[in-house]
Image 1: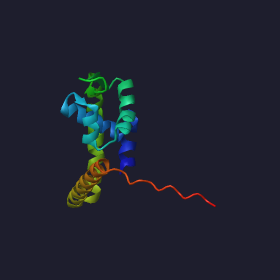
Image 2 (image 1 turned 60 degrees about the vertical axis):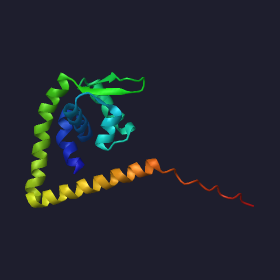
Image 3 (image 1 turned 90 degrees about the vertical axis):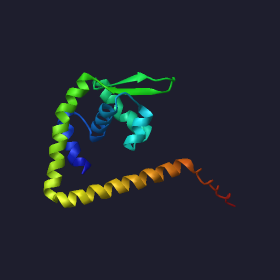
Image 4 (image 1 turned 180 degrees about the vertical axis):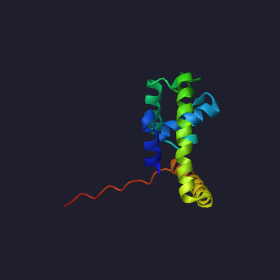
Length: 142
């Protein structure tokens, strides 16, 4: 599915992840990048990798936060214009899936994916809280 969305958005030079970042930032207003990554289920490295081109192209601006390490993201006027172009493309792509699968099947698939994402997010949080098991060093060969 992601390749279909990627292909649809390619003409705008935008990835599905970048669109999600722009939409989430637009909806939330200025948001700390760490909270944005958490809300989108991205690790910070992936988020920063996706944010850099958005910033470079003038669609997103990052601002200093309360601490030296904290950064806030905000959508620029140019980013808002890009969203006005991108959202109808995303919606028509989404509608093609719904039409092909049927509304009932689409609802079932969407609901299942939300459950999978919730389980994955919980598992990720548990992994971060639990210390990694100690690695056993191989015994020296004789």
